[in-house]
Image (cartoon, rainbow, N blue to C red; front, side, top):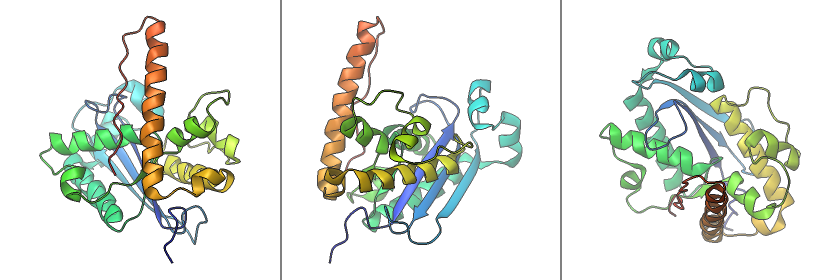
Length: 238
């Protein structure tokens, strides 16, 4: 019997970075959390975290969010090239087994990882996969689609209580954010019958459409406020 995407191992992914521009900023920390059983966890999570020396100064505003200073990263972090190569290799191995990677605001984390790989002359995710599917599940995109009119911000810590998940006081630490993201997606899968019943291909196509629709709507809103905005419609391929 073929298992649903809600029943197979999930790998959560998150980064903390030097800023909010995924094409130009750098990765400071990364976390991967493997959760057996997907929406119904089996045993303890398997967590791996990386601290990198990004090779550039970490702005004070970014340090205030994740708590990593330039000095600390230089003293304790590993070379950024080694870190991103290991993270990419682990993600690709998970995808090659046919399992989903879970990330909150996935286009950001996937884009910054690919940009870092290219910057350091390493094979990108697409190049490593060589045509194999890149199955990504993003609770943020799904929440925007299935609970579009719920009031409040669509951040991880504000979304979590809407699905009965307690927001952790250590949010903005990569490994904590990953575990919370997996908890939220698991709660969504149990709560939203239409979501759990989708095949991986259907879920991918739904996210592609939902992200593009949100980007168009939000971009229009920003432009009506007088801001010259452009939000990418790109989504990690399947």
